[in-house]
Length: 128
Image 1 (cartoon, one colour):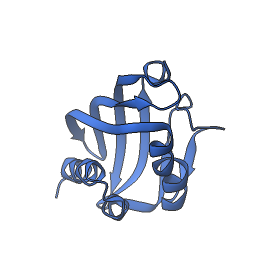
Image 2 (cartoon, rainbow, N blue to C red):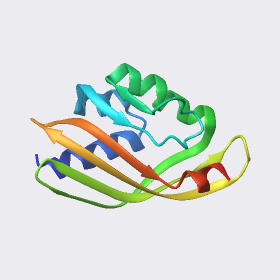
Image 3 (cartoon, rainbow, N blue to C red):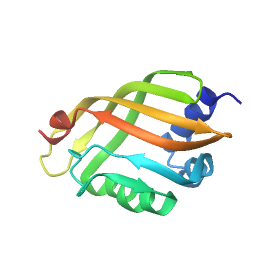
Image 4 (cartoon, helix red, strand yellow):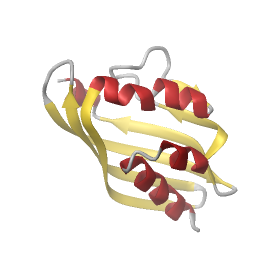
C-alpha cells in the first residue's frame, strides 16, 4: 500500500464513522495540528497521541457541527508527505448556518503509519 493509499483509507474510514479504523492507521504518538480558529480549540491546537486527538478533535465535531463531512477533491503525495485538498461541509450549531469551507491537510507517513497531521482550513467560513 502506498502512502497515498494509506491516507485515502483514513478518509474512507472517517467518512463511515469508523474511528477504530482511522486510529489503526495512526502512529500511537501522532502529532496533530488543528487550526486555532476551529470553535473547539483552545491553546496551540497541537495534540499528541490517539487519545488526545479523539478527545480534543473527533469528539468535538458532533458537539459543534451537524452533518460534518470532508470532501477530498485531490489526494497526492511525494516521499513521506501526502496532501489532501478539498473542503469541509456541515452546519455550525452555534450559528445555525451551513458551511462549505476550503480545507487542506498535509500528512506525514512513516513505516506505514500516519505520524503527523497539519490542517489549513477556512475557519472564517465555518464560524460565520
